[in-house]
Image 1 (cartoon, rainbow, N blue to C red):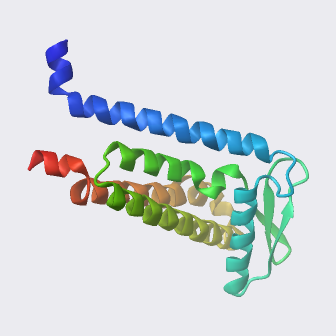
Image 2 (tube, rainbow, N blue to C red):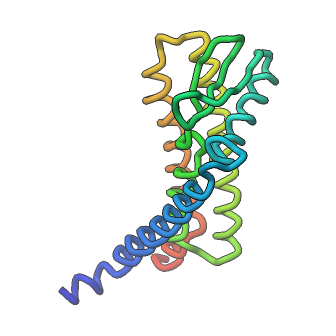
Length: 183
């Protein structure tokens, strides 16, 4: 058993680091969500911000978009030209995906400064792509509501998770300590 542990030490270290960072960040995010109940921003600040930014972006491309609190659930309704097209829920704010991204990068950490800036740049990129995803999805749902399932459950998750995967691969191949240890 000890020989296996020594042989796969880097794999075990990656898994444990990933799980610890993921658990810590997820727990912190849950504390944030619990603390935001009853706050000025509905359903929470980050989800509210994503809804407002999505509204602004939809307006900037020539549509008349508005957002409103959903009366029956903790979400914001995105309305385009008086047509309700989408709900912006907590899962739409990209924080869970950013937590997953950060956990992986830290598990394959390189030098501190490079790791920090890669996490920062990658998180901003994920956030921006997520906003664009919501805008394109909303406009798509406005014009093609019968394509809801394909747009929401296949194409757009593939884009956001595909981009995260590419960021991970770039990180591992370009900056992580794994590459340095194998050379």
